[in-house]
Amino acid sequence: MDLTTSNIRILAIESSCDDTAASVIVDNKICSNIVAGQLVHQKYGGVVPELASRNHQQHIVTVVQEALKKAETSTEQLSAVAFTKGPGLLGSLMVGSSFAKSLALALEIPLIGVNHLQAHVFAHFIDEPYPQFPFMCLLVSGGHTQLILVQEDFSMRIIGETLDDAAGEAFDKCAKILGLPYPGGPELDKLAGYGDPNIFQFPKSNVGGLDFSFSGLKTSVLYFIRDQIKQDPDFVQKNLSNLCAAIQHNIVSALLMKLEKACSEFGIVHAGIAGGVSANSELRKRLQMWGTKKGVQTYIPDFAYCTDNAAMIARAARHLYDQRIYEPLSTAPSARMNE
Ligand code: KG4
Ligand code: ZN
Image (cartoon, helix red, strand yellow):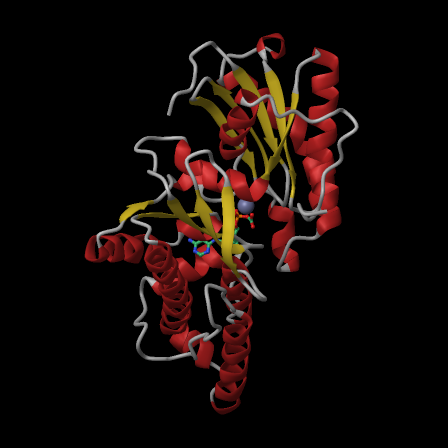
């Protein structure tokens, strides 16, 4: 990657869901990556949009200050300010975008709007070794599941996606059925490590082509648990780790099956995972094993760059900065990026 080393400093802000995050990238080096999570949603079992935007309002100033301080950067040194333009929760996006716009206006520096999903892919281009092109990226987050074919100029083509629930949503919804705290994905991953994935079996999703479907899994888990607890009210407690292992195995198998199909259809030998679910231990392990077996070079981002973070926004922003792709101050975020 040929990034000029001319002391270009970009501050990036991410606020698309329930994490308030800020990062400073200097040339191609991430100098700070600060994330403030929001525990307030736990008691509701999911993100409450109104509370998320209120909490972004409360956190954003200190998070940005901390990111600048850690990177030993003053606002006067900034070359540009970047923000997540979408997709995401509109109220949350508006906090980050308004903050970034005010800063760009006050400092008279360019404003850069970043697509959150593309930024997850850019997480692969923070630390070397960078993937080679063409690169097949399986993006698995709480809101999206996409197979993205990335070319050398960073053009991204979505060649497959979920028809209903996202992979992270499937983890979270199944975890909720099992009574695990929100967000259920990491909790389910932890418990699955103690379980046997072969005790229980849930139907494999069978949509054609390169698309995914996870809503059937959630329904079959729900009905199965409902039937079992009629006979034994403690069924879930007694079988928790085995249930988690079976659910995780089902989701990871479906993801890898489509990734393999995509790589073989497009003749790709460089593939990776990105997004919150790429922190999943079974997915990381099986991806590597699959790559070794099939002769595909696999890439997995550092944990800090899997779940939502501003370093990936900063890295994507640097790419846009190099092409002088800026936003006008009249810009507004979009809950869906095709609007
Ligand atoms: O990318 P992300 O942080 O936010 C979105 O853009 O959606 O992804 C969050 C999703 C949640 O559904 C969360 O449960 C899931 O990623 N997740 C995991 C793990 N860590 C986070 N799912 C399974 N195993 C994990 N270890
Ligand atoms: Zn995300």
